Image (cartoon, rainbow, N blue to C red; front, side, top):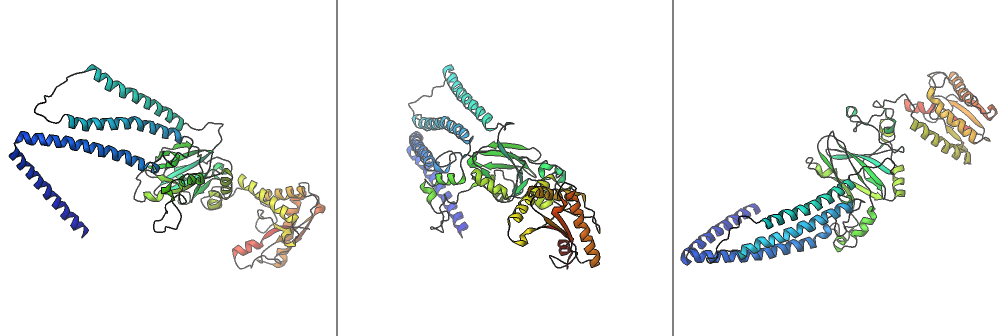
Length: 497
């Protein structure tokens, strides 16, 4: 129904315009051609002047009314170190072009009024004027030169890469339809290598897991965090089509081009909390965020820095929004500690893992830290149950008491712990599942406990501090009803005496 009404209105307006045209023609015939031309010129000139006034006032007033919604003005001052340079460049450009914009429109409409048709005015034709040519060539050239030089200085400042000795954090942003894959370096501070040929459902970035720098890298699937005051270098890539890495409040905008890595360097200078505090000073940001809930949170309370894609990359383009939180260094460190390595949590030990038969340096270091912490807790505890610790990372050849080569790392941790606590005496206990003969299992468990004790004493630990026991399948920690539970029962542990 609404569409029909609109069509009818358009038809009626067209009819009215046609009738006005006919009336104008009749009026001209009655008045005479020259009189009609004089009136027409007069009214066109006057209406042009009126339009100029209304138009320029609307431009100025609307710019003033909406300045607090625009980047660079009101509360939306740049939240990055380099952003002020860009804002200043745009402001200076706006001043020069704004002056030209206003003067040319005044001239355009004033001339339309002043030089309207009159039978007493004769046109004057000026073929050439050197002075005018010099003025309207030289002035724009000088202004353009100033703007270009400022722009080049801004470009060199904003696009400078990090120096070798600078303190910065590097992250990687890969655009795909329709998501950003954000990768942080691990504790080594380095992002691992990639090879597009390795891309798979499990390895979406094509990370080369033979490169040790990849082992501790973190892929963030939810909100991003960055520390305030810390320089950030963003590696920007794309997997499929053209995307654009856009952080408006930080004046960061760089295309993500398939096959052509780019980068952007910036330093956040306002935390999310500080930016909200700036917004809070303005009445329009104290309005309800949801107009349907006038008692709910205000607009400033719901503000978040947002990573967006500034290219029309497909119909799901809108879903590439990602929240970015700028926080203090302490808050960032706390969040960072909670992140898990993608390789260790998703790839390690699976078919995609090229290091399945190896113990990695990162694992050795982490296991040593965990073992030391567990040992300290056990020594300090007064609870008997806490005095027993399982040697989780040792193994034996099937059906024998021969230690596997990878067991040495866990046993070296035990040696280190016994040296750190020279007063501690321990019992090393071997356990099996219930598969096979019970006596044979007991003998095997005793032999395995003895193998562990020998490894420890061969590295300088006094044998008087150790005793061994083989318990066979007499002390299960889980029912022997599945492969998983039987694996839990096949263990070697030690108890602080």
